[in-house]
Image (cartoon, rainbow, N blue to C red):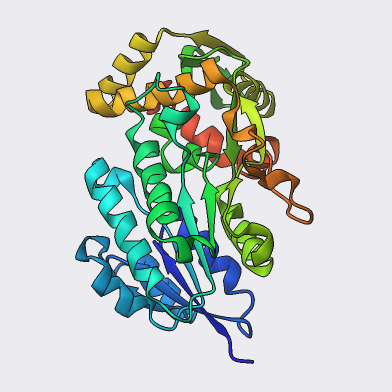
Length: 344
């Protein structure tokens, strides 16, 4: 039997890259077509060297251009990047273009859509500035209502915070280390102090977290069992864990005391603005967190399949991630470049 063609949007990114790496393990089953904006960048060239058919694609070019690229696909893993434009209008247009193109592919067996839940629905209309959730949720609704035949073969994956954000963007995702004093020990300078985390939610508020490198494992599990996951939404997280608990584990492994400080939403928003976020984006992030503070661990809803409960799917925990990346995390913290803020 000929290998199935798997189209991966954003093949050089964190999500798409994980999907590509997982499906590359099965060359007799899948042929991978990876889409990226710049086929000349190193990450794209590396994929080409591994046998991936890397093609240039701009989601702003519309469904007709995407339809040509999707031709012959059995599986499409589709995503949009809100932060590239920071525009709901742009992201919704891109998501609709992906859906419109996929709906016209006669060979398509499975459409896997990277999404987020509807913040208005989950917060009963209270938090309406979480644009990077709402735009993806609107695309999901578009597929369901306007593309019913595509919806019949669609699986929606709801993504949470990534553990890897601590490594790729320590400035935004790691706690601050206060440098209270220095001691000379065995001819080496040791910085002593404590880790400080300022957050607008309580230290016990549970937030969904996952290692983004596990994305590929989930996607392959889904496409191997299509009838189980068609028309379903999967809450993709390894564990509901609070920032307080994450800090306890991090501090234990690197041997530095910690302090968790709950800030007001206004203080947190100003903090985000001080490190370069626009007022609108800072409010977006702040309200996102407040949904969990006021409405609980909404990813644990019975409306969603729980990824961490899927038989045979092993997802990395925060403690495992810290142990695997201990030295790099220490280096990021010791650099002193990271303020105590959190985003996702």
